[in-house]
Amino acid sequence: MIFNTNQPLAERIRPTTLEEIVGQQHIIGKEGVLKRAVKAGVIPSMILWGPPGVGKTTIANIIAQQINANFFSLSAVSSGVKDVREVIHKAKGYSKTILFIDEIHRFSKSQQDALLGAVEKGIITLIGATTENPSFEVISALLSRCQVYTLKSLEESELIDLLKRAIKSDEKLKKKKITIKEYDALLNISGGDARKLLNLLELVVDALQSDKIKITNDVVTKIAQQRIAIYDKSGEQHYDIISAFIKSIRGSDPNAAVYYLARMIEGGEDVKFIARRLLILASEDIGNANPTALVLATNAFQAVSMIGYPEAEIILSQCVTYLASSAKSNASYVAIKTARSLVKKTGDLSVPMSLRNAPTKLMKNEGYGKGYKYSHNFENNFSHQEFLPEKIKETKLYDPGKNPREEELRKRLKALWKEKYGY
Image: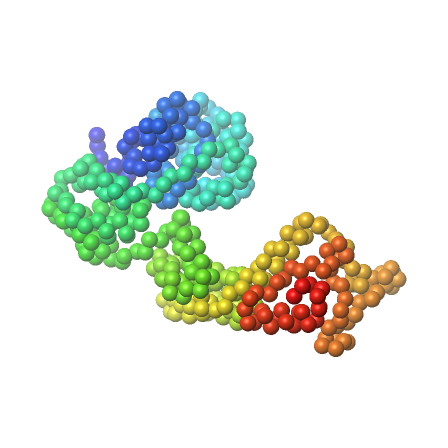
């Protein structure tokens, strides 16, 4: 066999059988559902869901090889409806065709719709790979026609085993005497991604330029130049980190919040993305408990958009620590969600006649605007009248939070409306 040493290590030692794959034994092991399907030669359309570098692409390739299927591969990042239709057209000339779509969660609804008929008729067997929850990212019609298999993160022992296999099996590496004294840096920098791990190993070996190599944490860190936080802007880590970031601010922990901010900055996250999430949080999780939070978040967004990195990190840190330390309330968030739910439930209720606009004489004669009380003409700029449709009158949708600022709002509303809304 001729080995192309110009290929990355991860490609050179990519498994060619299910037995060679490290991990995922729950689906490809001796009793695994995919193992049985391959053995029977009957492969359902499926979605492989799991973090980066755990074998999704490899499994798809091996399945196609082992059932002698014609294999097409598309990336959702660079392919469109036209590409999908071309594959479907070609597939009609084969008895078995597997279409592998990497990052299928990036396909739009129209792109996913283009797959439906071919999957349903069996023209193609779809294997989609995604790092995102398919129940959110894949349209229900397509999802109902696919089996979803969850791939697990590789264990530390499995990743170490992978490194040992590479050193022993790769034609390039086995010519050298390689000893790994410490694994922590290799594992941490690669973040559990087997592909990154193998390519990092090769980077270290190439950099040392010796036939006798000892790998330590210090050696790996220096060669990698920058110890990249375990963060992937296009993968699952992106969503895990931003989730932890938001929850830390919501949970009033500025220390954890600024830590996750640093993780995103080190990972090269778009400064506007971070600032945009802070804007949303300022209303969703703080709201009227501290209206200044939204003002600061808005100003922070404008400032970092103009300045960019590296100075933007100072502004972001100020905003993050302020929001995390602020009083919290989701009362405004709950109010609009409750109101929308009520609208969906009750439909298009008639607006009270007193509140309707009456630009014409006919409309005035019909009673439009009759009985409306202009609030500013009354004491405290308030007049007691009904603003909601008759069917849902006296419905309380906004319930001020239990914090000093909103307690003031509660007292004012109670003084105005008495017992009407139960404030």
